[in-house]
Length: 206
Image (cartoon, rainbow, N blue to C red; front, side, top):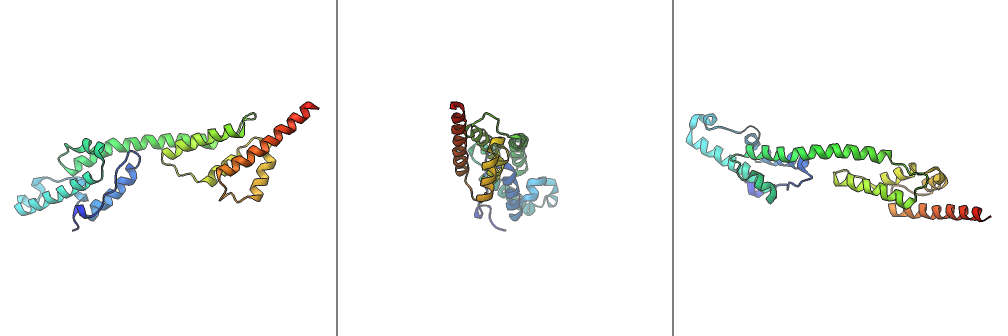
């Protein structure tokens, strides 16, 4: 069996508990100690008190606990410092971090709904609309959502006010949305917005 110190444990953060727990389970399984973390053990269950078997079991238990220690930062270590078994340490971390994960998922669902419902208001400038979109996108990304620029570009184009219909069609027909940057889209829309304003001002002066 490989030693607990010969492999690098993934690091637990406030945002990655689910991924961390899956990776740690695989590592602890590779080290042949996951059964102790999952179900624990008692001396009575260890080969009828056979001293050598008990010693081997305790060694495996220490390897499991040490591996968990390797996978946490100082703040998380303080949570499990008094745990006497790897099973106890694992359950403490699960209680502390899995709950945070669930809250994040609920929050992310709400943000996704907000993102899908976004529409430019009739009198809203391109700059202000982009700011609203980017604000929600940043929140989604902080909660673990992977959003590529192409998804944002497509979302913005289909949610613009009707006065942008012409430029919307022109962009979709002339540009490759897969490689279009948000800055490029914003620049094109703002230039078109300025032309609309100038025409409107010209009609007013007449």
